[in-house]
Image 1 (cartoon, helix red, strand yellow):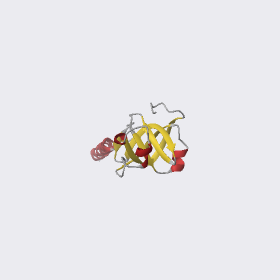
Image 2 (tube, rainbow, N blue to C red; image 1 turned 180 degrees about the horizontal axis):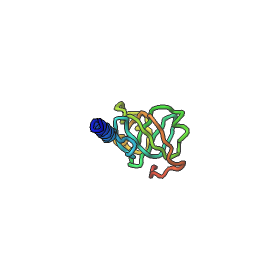
Image 3 (cartoon, helix red, strand yellow; image 1 turned 90 degrees about the vertical axis):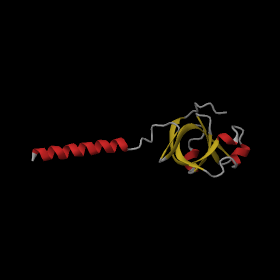
Image 4 (cartoon, rainbow, N blue to C red; image 1 turned 120 degrees about the vertical axis):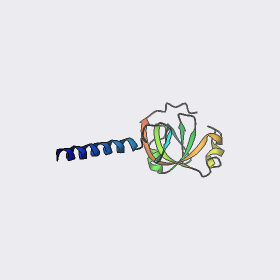
Length: 126
């Protein structure tokens, strides 16, 4: 009986350890991709009801999603998690009106979550 109990305990501990090793680490990237989406940090801007994020890496993101949540953080440093959108990231109205970058460095991101980092922007956005 004690041998069976020890074997069962060893199997339980090793299966828990394997499960922990396979769990995806999604929150550790400042600008990375995962199954849950892409996480980007930068300065949030608004113009004409359109929201953009000037990331710390130099890429500008046109944001789509809950504008009520985004409006609270305009002018702040934020970390946004979202899904990249394939539709018209280089032909949208922001690429025509934006003086921040050319269309090659602008992407569209469907926002899933917004995390406030700072009330002031530390990124070198122009």
